[in-house]
Length: 310
Image (cartoon, rainbow, N blue to C red; front, top):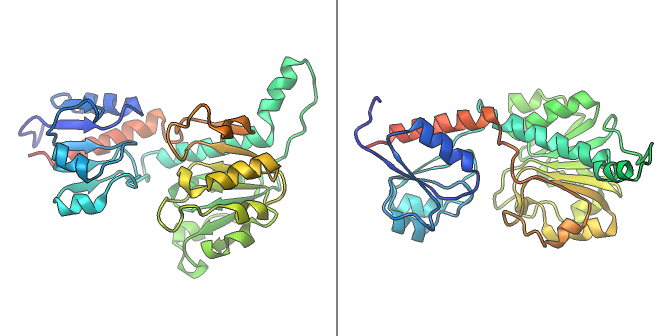
């Protein structure tokens, strides 16, 4: 293997997303793959965080030379602590991996499950009742998509085929839009400062934004209240962008008719969480977990490890 000077110890810091460790082991067969930072012995050369928090104590314990995320999100990595210790940090942008496509598919799936009331349809089948429940068509529905990066663009591409009226909300003014976003077939575009206006009488909201200080709690009581009563909310981005008490209250009051969630505030979600008693469609953070995206992401992570091999 070119550039292969010595065996590398790679800590896959979480037992979540087990296929990631399997693929890295397949692509880097001469290296040592350790799983779960609670069980592994230091030191290591590389930390692959997945869903684990990588903070200063963890860095001091394992003394890695590289932190390489299996995917895009670095919000769980203390970047300042890594920089202070001279530790390189890398991720895998969504473009070209198929990750955004997979997340876009799951977002549309959740919206369809809610709009066509799949849970109630199952109950009707069990009771041998035909012709109910009455669902909401996506054709003509006002759907607001918050975040127009790779995932948001993938959602727009898929929902456009249903004839929905798509309203995009992004971090930039209209004059600052990238060519890719400007070319999207949207019925309207508003900057994040005008989110309340965008959500007025919306039939559905799909959250695709990146989690940062500016988006944490972005969708709260006022935003949910602005939507049409009985509207639907789908979150395929990060849990904390959606305010938990606001969502739970809106579901209980009927202001929000249902929520589709692939991401949560604490992952995995507690099976006793009161949110689960409401009309929710849930998946275990599988938006980007496909045979295509995982292979491509693993190849990019392996290549990044090769570049930093001592």
